Image 1 (cartoon, rainbow, N blue to C red):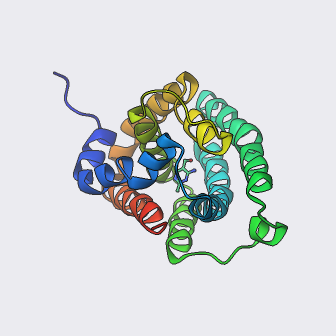
Image 2: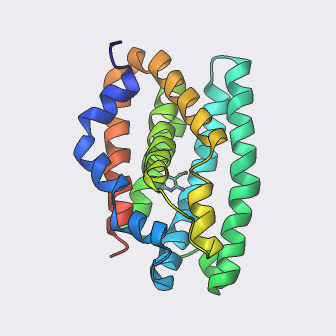
Length: 212
Ligand SMILES: Cc1ncc(CO)c(N)n1
C-alpha cells in the first residue's frame, strides 16, 4: 500500500475530533430530518458568518496558488459557493423567518469568532499551503459526514439540500483535488500547516457541540 499523503497524516493525527465531528448528533438529526428548527436556525446563522470569511480565504488561495490551473479550479468552486450555496442560505433564512439583522450581523459565538480568526490568519499568511490547510479541513470534513448518510433524503429542503450540497460527485472530486494540492505543497511548511489543520478540526467539532 502507498504511504499515506500529507493530508491523511494530518487527519489521522486529529482523529478523535474528526470522528466526533463527522458522527455528531447534529449530522444524525440532519439525516433524519429531525433537527429542531431553533437549532437549525442557530447553526445556519453562525455558518453564514463562517462562509463570509471562508469566501475571503478562498480568494486568498486563488491569489496565492502556484498555477493558473489551480486558480481556475478554486475559482469555479468559489462560484458555486457564492451562487448555489448562498441562495440555499437565503431560502433557508426565508423559510425559518430569520430577520435581516441576523443574516447580516448576528452576535457571534466564541467558536465562530475563533474560526474566523483561523481563516483570517491563513488568508493573511499569503501562503497557498497555509490557506489549503484550513480549506481542506472545512471541505473534507463536510464531505466525510455527508458521505456517511445513507437512505432517502429528508423531506424539508433545509435539511436535504445541506446534505446534497456536500454529498455529490462534483464536491467529492473537488475535495480529492484539494487534498492533492495540500499533499503537494504542505510538506514544505509542515509544522505551521499541521497547526492550522489541527485548530480547524477542533473548531469544526466545537461548532457542532455549541448547538446543544
Ligand atoms: C463550520 C463549517 N465548516 C465547513 C463548512 C463547509 O464549507 C461549512 N459550511 N461550515
